[in-house]
Amino acid sequence: MEFNTFDDAYLALLRSGDYRTAEHFVAYFGRLIQIKLRARVRASHEIEDIRQETFVRVLAVLRSSDGLRQADCLGSFVNSVCNNVLLEYYRSTARRIPIDDEGDEAGMPDNRIEVLATVLTEETVSAVRKILDALSERDRRVLKEVFLDERDKDEVCRDLGVDRDYLRVLLHRAKSSFRALYSKNLCSSKKFKQAVSI
Image 1: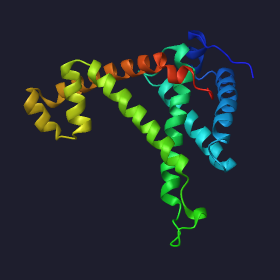
Image 2: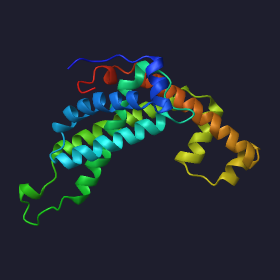
Image 3: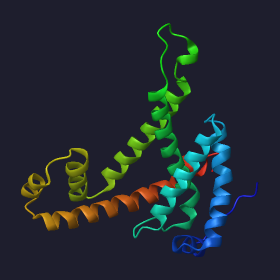
């Protein structure tokens, strides 16, 4: 299979909803995603569900006002979104698999699922920690208190000495900074660039 490189013009057409570009994008990455998933998911209808969910999420981000803007990161971005959807699938599958009272192996969840889920989760946690460390003290504090600690926003406002409207501004800035660093981290990550599947 021939691998494509993507430029800013391609990304702009994709973001604008150009039909031919979207058709090429889905055909190209659809084949790569299927190759990736065939080794990891047994049922063909579940492969298709994961593939479609990946495209829905990728296109939503691309078409958002602060979505991906670096064309050379497109492949690694699609791969990371697919990994996240796959991880969710593994978690939901693990919850659905009944464990036989007699310990029959047929009823036991596949250990590979647990291992991959753990690896993907550890990579995500590690990446998020690095990005948070690179943020300004204020951005890091706002994101941590609102999203990680889930503190009441009125309490956060009192601690920061700001009103709710300005807290929204601070959150918007902090999230934008986080996204920019996340995108940069994604592009430079050897793991994504060397991923076999995409």
